[in-house]
Image 1 (tube, rainbow, N blue to C red):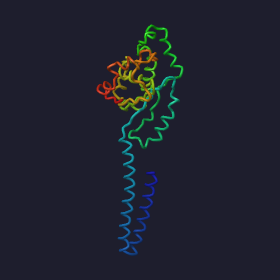
Image 2: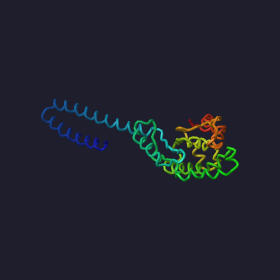
Image 3: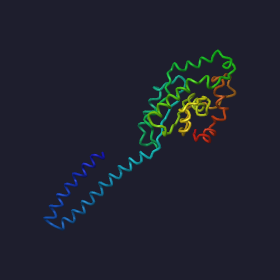
Length: 240
């Protein structure tokens, strides 16, 4: 550690001082040789200290990113603990610094039952569900997760949304404004979000499918001009 190296340097310096004084008294020529050795020793220690400083500087210059995982259907934060454990193990190899406040959107398994509110509606039968009305509970949970990140990291932290399955197109809808949120958290999230990563996410509703399982939600998001990868990149600098 840096502390041990400093202690060793002080100890060796005192040793060199005493040894040098003795050699100078006994043999001037030997003293000259020992001073040269001491200089080499100081150079070696200074080199190690420089390497430590370089390592710290490398960590500090890494881009700091907080990850918010948008879970798949019926998934909860516990299901993504392994993902965050793996990221922690790879922290020294990653080109970015993962913020400690990174987390999963706080959803419980029973929260998904809220979709059932739309079952008896005409919009559901016609496969024309309204994105905000149907997914408002998910959008609110996203903002809760973002609020916790900003509170812990500050408003200058970069955000990366990771969407798993349905979470990918829900995240697109949120960033594209289909949540109709006017909160300060939403404005800050769109400003600070630099990337959206989707895992196993269907982004286009298959026209040939016998039944649209999303009941029009995926089609509405895919057809929204504000939710397209091009729009998110050009309007907000968000890469997908």
